[in-house]
Amino acid sequence: MAENPSFLCRRTFVTTALLGLAGCAAACSTAAPWYTPDTNSQADALEVPLSALGPENYVILDAKNFPAPILLARQDQNYTAVEMICTHRGCAVHVQRNRLVCPCHGSQFELNGNVLQGPAAQPLRRYSVQQEGDILHITRSSY
Ligand code: FES
Image (tube, rainbow, N blue to C red; front, side):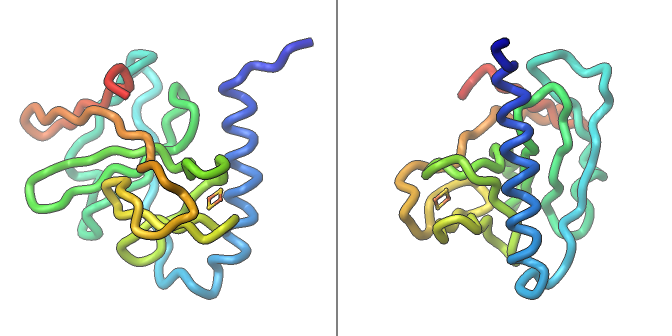
């Protein structure tokens, strides 16, 4: 029986996230904030209130209708949303200070997904972010 690809991706994420947490326990200075968007969101979109970002200027979105958690970050007045899966070989990345770090082979990314250090050569998958008042609309149609 064929497995649902999104299930595989979520299972891979959870497995690698647990491995990453073990490695991150000593290195991560603070726990990253999480936000679970309303499950009534459209299948290819999320609505997130600006207040979810908090003082850290980022939040991890646990979006059930997306294949993996998403890091939503604010830099100045620009918002970015990236999938927290390393583009090298698909491990889950985690937030460590002001960057995303892959525990598998050491790739590092800016919070907007740009590569800081390989072996990953491609940026993290980005989603479109549109602001409407105090709500951010994140869609995956543009990646
Ligand atoms: Fe992330 Fe290899 S899977 S660096």
